[in-house]
Every structure is written in C-alpha cells, then in structure tokens.
Image 1: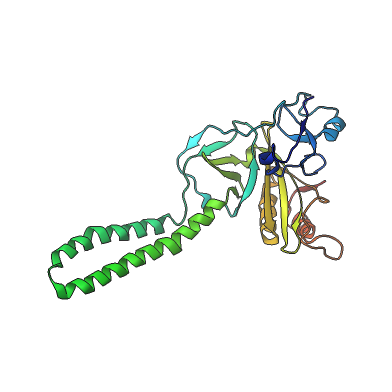
Image 2: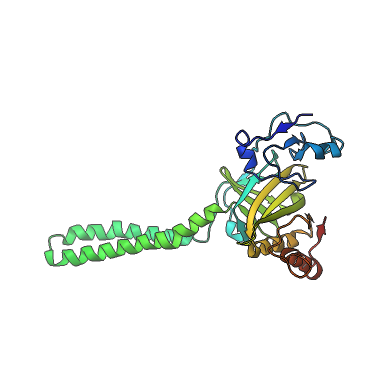
Length: 294
C-alpha cells in the first residue's frame, strides 16, 4: 500500500483543489496521510482505506505518486457556452479518461457586437482617412472633420470597452457550465464536454465557507460510466446554489444524485433545518427531483 503524507509546500497544488475523502466527506489537509486508488484515482484517508478493506473499484492497488490530470481527444469546431444557464468558476481535478469530448472554439452571444465595432473601425480607416487627405488643403473643413473623426473613434472604443470586453472578461472566469443534458468545463486546451448519459453518479457535500457573506463551498464528486472519478470544488451564494440544484434536479432522471445532507452549507438555519436543505426537500417533494440523501 502506497501512502502519501500531505505537506503544505510540497503539495500546495493538490491542497488548492480542496479535495475530500469520498466516504467520510472530510477535507484533505496538510498533515493527513492518504492513499490513491490506482483504478479511479480517488483519494482516501488511510483510515478510510483500511475501513474499505484496502480495496476500491474491485482491486487493491494504490498509486505510488499523486496523480496529475491529463486531457483528451475528440475535437469539434464550434461550441456555444450560452446554452448553459448555470455558469460559475470552480477548481477542477480530472482523472485520465477518453470519455470527454474536446471542443476547440466557443461561440458567444456578444460576437455580433464585436463584429460591429470592428466594422466601424474599418470604416474609419477605409473611408475617413482617404477623405481627410482629399480635403486636407481646405483649412476651414479640416478642424471640424478632425473633431468628427475623433468622436467616431471614441464611440468605437467605448463600444468595445464597455459593451464587449467586460462580458468577455467575466465569461473567461467561468469554467464550469451545466444545462439539463450535459456538463462542460473550460480548460487550457479547449472546452471539455460530456453528456449526462455518460455520467453514472454525482455525490455532493460541502460546508459554510463564510456565513456572514452567505457563501458556501460545494465539493462535487463525478463518476463517469467508464468508472473514473473527477472532483469539482466551487463557492456559491444561496441564489447560485439553488440554480445548481435546479439543474441537478433535471439530471436526476438519468443520473444518480447523492447528497450528504449533514455535510452541506446551511446558509443559516430555519426553525428545524437549514435553508439549503429546506430548498432541497422542496425540489424532492414538489419538483420530482430524484435526489438520494445519504
């Protein structure tokens, strides 16, 4: 059995992933001794691994090194992220697998605005500058013309800066995308995409990251049909959390959704239960969400 003692500096990249023991839900921290299943690359506390009889995925082999995520194959040209109503920034840890598809480009709804701005700039260069050379000898026309050119150039700049760039900057921050039929992840090499038909199960746990600001941390453990496990960690306010679980309620027709009800952000407590858990029970009882509470 290969064990690894997690150290703050040596394993800073691993600690930044905020991974949890999938059985106990405990966060892995510096000083913990852990084991990695050789088949699915999941991380377990040594005590948990021993509790499992030192077996997982039907085998007992463990990794002698902390695994690094790798990526992937099938490529297509156009991918539209605007079809995903749930979009957030997340920490993502992927196991090696061939089940994802990779899309090299993305299409955004603000592409038309960018083309318009570029067209205006082309008009300035292609039409106004030649006109300037034509009337340059007319001193009485030169100053009004230069002022009009300056105003047109300023308008083009403002359209780019205040209509397009903020959207693109914010959109680039998001790397986790969900809709009712699929999951997409933005990575350096492209957009990774998988249909829920290829997702076997999703287990969710978490805790209150900041009760004052009503921010919760969620840890999502994704198991694909090929048996590989992938981890996603994200910070959500209550509105975002409700949006996440709404999308997952749509998934639950085809995907097993396991929720650790005693290891979730609360967002404050009601009379008998947390605000989030109350919302989950609402989805379960009145919106036919097929969640399994564990």
